[in-house]
Length: 336
Image (spheres, rainbow, N blue to C red):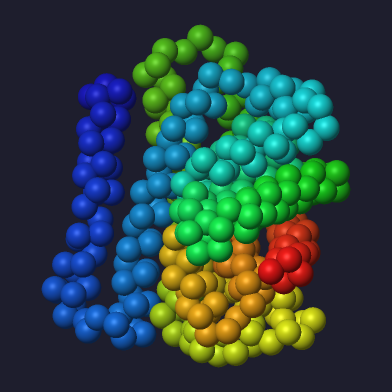
């Protein structure tokens, strides 16, 4: 069977699986397992059973498509185009791309991996990784409805600033040596392909090869990361966090960021929690800092990234982004 025909069949299967995933999970959790809706255990199990296949499906599709795209552009050419841009422009482009990309932090990681493999500077790839989950259009709309256009605009502006500046700082630190060797090994395979004249079927096969090489290396880390997020998602008490984040002490903002980092949710999923926290007396800046840390700087994301990045770079990434989020929290508390 030709690679293109096989790809068409698999794409159809992927669309069916993704479209009916939520219904299938409902049947499994509430029908087959007969779990009671609303309990902590059910919430945790449902989160894992739904998020794990969703992220893995996205991983396969994104890696496959990026693999095909990479066959058209050499890593050197891509890097040259971005590195020759005026100061910060590459980070700006990556951040803007992240805004229009509907990915949570864990599902944005596959595209981040593809960027690294394509030879795009690390700082630019981090700008995308930060912006993709943090500046979500659903969050912006809900913030606009709850607090008005000024707060929504400041949220977008500050989130974009964090993504751009954090990526710029990471790029200046020259931390490429902290990327795992296997990532650059895949890049070398891509370079060899450029020297040949290839058909579209060859490019599709290259996409399949990318899926085989990358998914085999990261799927276990993804399941561990989502498992951690599921456990905390189902059992972390909202009342406790609201009582801490509602205080006006100077340490409330950094503490909320520390609390938010181990959690995992996309922007749409965290908005109801943010709304509940605000209703219970939490301050806006502290709550939004918590929200940004959950969707843009989560422990499950770090676990997944560990397969791609060495610990030194993960610590640098967390430190730079957390500093920006804390500053945003203080800013919101000052203006509201």
